[in-house]
Amino acid sequence: MKKNKENNQRTILATEALLLEIIKSPDEFKNYDSLVEALKSQGALAKYEDAERYIGTVAINTVKSLSELLLDDGFVGFDRLRINARDTIERALTGKIKKNTTESARQKLASTEEALIITQQSNFLLNTVIKEMRAHLKAMALQDGTDEERLKRYKDINKKVEAQLNYVNHGEV
Image (tube, rainbow, N blue to C red; front, top):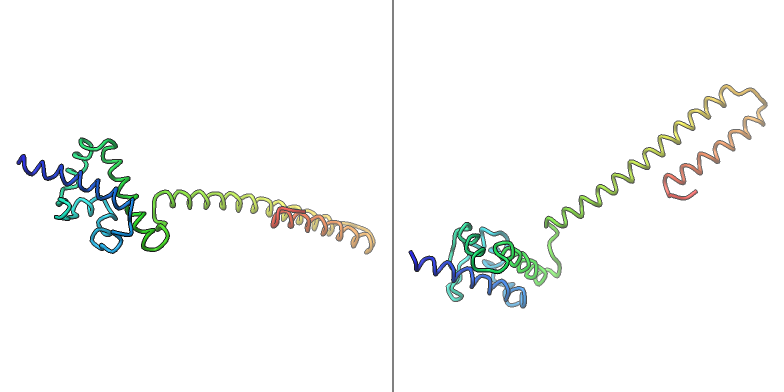
């Protein structure tokens, strides 16, 4: 039992060393498909084996508990190393990092929320313009006067509506 615990501890420390090595020089590791796959999740990394580096399979709970005991940053730091190693290999393979991370999802959500707010404001302004246009149409329909007076009133109202629509659509009058 004691030997198994020692092997597990050796595995955690060797895996940490491997992750640091990957981060420093990812080009040396980008062609190891099993390693690239293992970096994709915590569980896959726990199951990764490399006899030359004294890395054996370990249960994920063992990884969590031993990394808390053995490493300064605990399991959070260990997982951060895994993510950084995954990202550096991804960058070495494709020249960019995949955008499927939680942070990119947060950024996408924030930009979508901004677009929604802008759309809501634009819709509010358009509704206001439409209400004003309807009021002007009603006033024109009930207006008495010559054709010239109605035409002049129409042109004034049309100019005002065009200015409002330009503001709504382009932010300028």
